[in-house]
Amino acid sequence: MEIDTSSLDEYLADEGLDGYAVYADSDDSTQRYLSGFDAPDPFFTVYTPEETVLLTSGLEYGRATKEARGSVDRTSEYDYQSLREEHGAGTARAKLQAAFLDAHGIDSVAVPETFPVGAADGLREEGIALAVDADGVVDDIRAVKTEEEIEHVREATIANEESMQACEELLDAADVRNGTLYYEDEPLTSERVKTEIEVTLLEHGCALDETIVACGTDAADPHNRGSGPLEAGQPIIVDIFPRSKETGYHSDMTRTFVKGEASETIAEWYELTQEAKRAAFEELEAGATGADVHAAVCDVYEDAGYPTLRDDPSTETGFIHSTGHGVGLDVHEAPSLSPRGGELEAGQIVTIEPGLYDPEHGGVRIEDIAVVTEDGYENFTDYPEQLEV
Image (cartoon, rainbow, N blue to C red; front, top):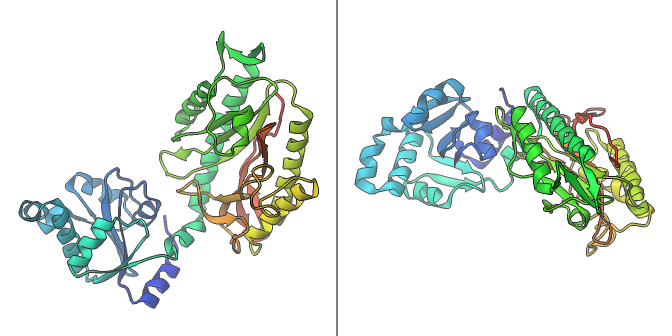
């Protein structure tokens, strides 16, 4: 995949640095993005305007030469084992990485804020100048997706919809006994629904570390994962944010369900949240700001008499989070749809996820994912919004 690193080149030139270095495994999104390589153990990558070079063990060398974005050196080329025997692991690593940089004519590098302190200290001791990329230059580059990246997120969204369907079918098949949902003569729990979601995602090439199936008062806390038996007549927030096992890209979607009849309050919240989501999408386009999109949601809720953090920063009920966030190799990344959200660009992928919360009633949230275009957006989410099942 070709990526546009022109702004990184400008940053390095302005700062008088030779390159940009990352030392991490591929769970680190900056590493995965710059190297193009997926490996479970930390490896060293250096980007310069002329080349991208990886330093890997012999274990990963063969695969890296086929998959990585740049060229690959082996640690054995720098006599790493002898260095380790003489100096110990930490010092040997620093000398190895410094020798690798010297071989490629690199004396100074920028590093992300997440660069390990021990590795940074070791490189400085070896005479390498390091500067921390406090501005998140690579994060800004990653925020604007290529067509290939957009397709990766679209594919993850299709898998996500399959898992949401599996969840809804499980809720629909459940019966109610004394207010509690039962499935196959056992109480239907948040944990059982999460398992169904996870299995479905695995069948479609995706995985996740956790998901949200929160019922009743649990749903009043936006990031409560939920636990225990699910109850009829109570809102159940289902928020699923899987990652493609092949590409590493995420999707994100939320729906709120009630088994049986929703209360008047929850039904009102649901309709109002649909209105808020529509208002946000009406603002979503290149040139608008994340703050504009967020303000549209706040307007809807405040006009209906509900508190938001905009008009009451101390509120613990009402609309108590931002409108959305970027999605890509990380499930939460730039840009931000919040009071601090800057100008949006075509190619950025964002969530729109308004919601209302109050422990007395629970919570309601509805979330779609879309790519910003020059004249609006393309909504990837094609899953129906139906409160009662």
